[in-house]
Length: 479
Image 1 (cartoon, rainbow, N blue to C red):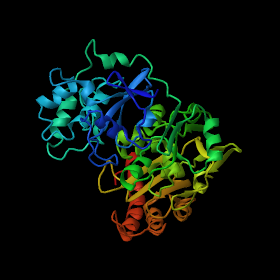
Image 2 (cartoon, one colour):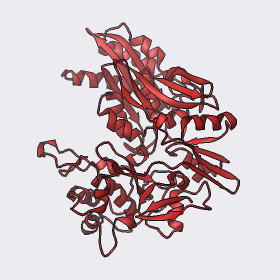
Image 3 (cartoon, rainbow, N blue to C red):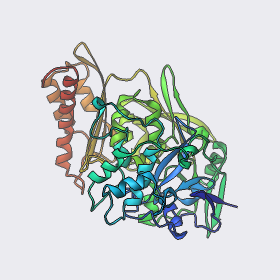
Image 4 (cartoon, rainbow, N blue to C red):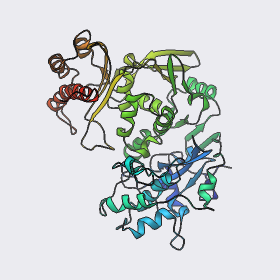
């Protein structure tokens, strides 16, 4: 008997299609607060809360895009929707603040905002901030406005929604969802659902997954489903076998050693961000610019590599960090440098029967890093061009330079010619200007709906000049 706990009540999954999304399943059950606005994880109208393991508490209420995730992947799990937070007769504090501060007009997006805001409301460690620590994206109550970066509003405007977020206090005594944080979330259920010729599997171990892949290498592997979900919704993808790996313990390793950092492929970007706590400055710069919090709560580092996309932002940082990937199959394991991993447009060295197990970052890290993302929107957008830098500069000389580029070729790539133009030379404006001319010619940029080839080339050169200016400013040199 397959079930999911929704708003405290068990609901049956029997007979549900493998490709039915959490959103459609909820709405079919009459829980219509969550809406479909875009079907690709960009608007947040479908946001719901899922109980996930926490860092500072046993459970953490995590906001996800219900439009992207197959409901089969949540068998045995626990969901709270906007209806489960409060009712018109008994509003949740988040709902009440949005109402009294004019944060809702048409109401289409409001339930999604409510769920994303509730996730931040219950976040352990959210505390009031001193007046001198206020910034535009954090309220005096410690509310991180980035929690709402994946929620779009098209009629009210964001100020009353922000005001509601910044007015929230802490959960009151007797708050059931706050009390729930102290007990662990449900363990991932071993799942096998077969309906209408399609099958969904959540194996118990990595060995079982590898056995499935050895026998059926065309099986679709899913973790956060932030990429696959778009294919299902907008392109009609209907794979006959879907295998979930997001909760496998063997793919969720996190270790900071003397010589390297190990990141399990199934760790979400949010989990990595919170576990690293700034130890990798380049990733610390990247994470807030990677899509939205809703997407980062689901997207995994292994999934971002597995798609082979030329505009996957984490890939550029891993290139600059000289990272390697551990691939595993029944034949054994092998380590592949990220610089060698991509072989063509959405093509990689990963064999059909292999999984990405771990991403390894060598230590020590380069001391001077930056991540530049050029896009039409500052947040929640796909890069037109993105650049990741990691440089060693000693006594005014560039000792080592590693630069990752995205959006300018069929694959993410290292800016090898630019690196050669920098290494061994003085870190001066004239030398950087010469290297910027070289960098503008890197890759094979094209004209498309995001940017022209000439714009992309120009942005490459400007990015290096900007990095030089940022470095001087960090060193206290006026520019």
